[in-house]
Amino acid sequence: MTTALKKTTGIDMKLTNIGTIKELFARHGFSFTKSLGQNFLINPAVCPKIAELGLEGANEPSEVCALEIGTGVGVLTRELAKRYKKVVAVEIDTKLKPILEETLADFDNVEVVFADVMETDLAAVIAEKLGGAETAVCANLPYYITSPVIMRVLESRLPVRSMTVMVQKEAADRLCAAPGTRECGAISYAVRYYSTPELMFRVNRGSFMPSPNVDSAVIRMTVSPKNTLPEEREELLFRLIRAGFSQRRKQLVNPLSGELHRSKEELSALLGSLGIKPSARAEELALEDYIKIAESI
Ligand code: SAM
Image (cartoon, rainbow, N blue to C red; front, side):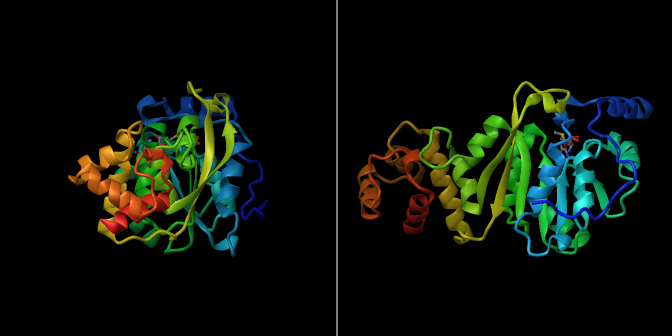
């Protein structure tokens, strides 16, 4: 899908050009902070695709807003600003401020909040800065907080339509893995509880500056209210899944009996009554099986 670009600039800033980035850095005295996962995108094909994916399926694309996490020099921010009604981006590194003032100067629909995304009340950001409009999360996530950020958005049931994010390839495989596959883990079930994940495309390590040691991939999680257990059941559900995967080679009744302080016989009978093989391992259960167990305890 190609969305009509709302904003056009005469000469587009080439923020994917290494020379342009180096010149910006030299002029503003900026240097990378490795611990913040600063690997900036220099492949010109990637950011427009991420921006477009967040709009796919929207009834009124011109009304959708974007929430970005981690601006870097604003390469994705600019692509979002061209297509979305308004963009709010949360960036932790205040050293990027003078650079962003320059690179985002020709957009009046972008606001950068300088804060740690893990400490930011994102629901308040969406309500106050985006007026509660339909919102898509789009980001090239800092790798050191990939799962915490994703789970924070999903678990807090932020009112967002989707999250389209770049993550390391292995993380992408795990987050999108279907139950029953070798890659799946507790987080694969959690992601599926709140959303429908899709692996969209791979991005090689040469697409970043500096280049990381591993390849990456863009995934999209389309958020839906399909599963809505009461809060205490939800907590129990994730406790059961985590317990199961903490001993994934063992039969599920073993870790579950430890977690729930019940005998293996009692749990075997319970699983049997729910149509689940008592000898099954954690990864052999569907999400619906875990939900049935959480509902019946
Ligand atoms: N979007 C840019 C791009 O694609 O080139 C930058 C992506 S870079 C992988 C991750 C960005 O997240 C960096 O700009 C980094 O400073 C920022 N960041 C790291 N930790 C953060 C945090 N806790 N809260 C907000 N931003 C963070």
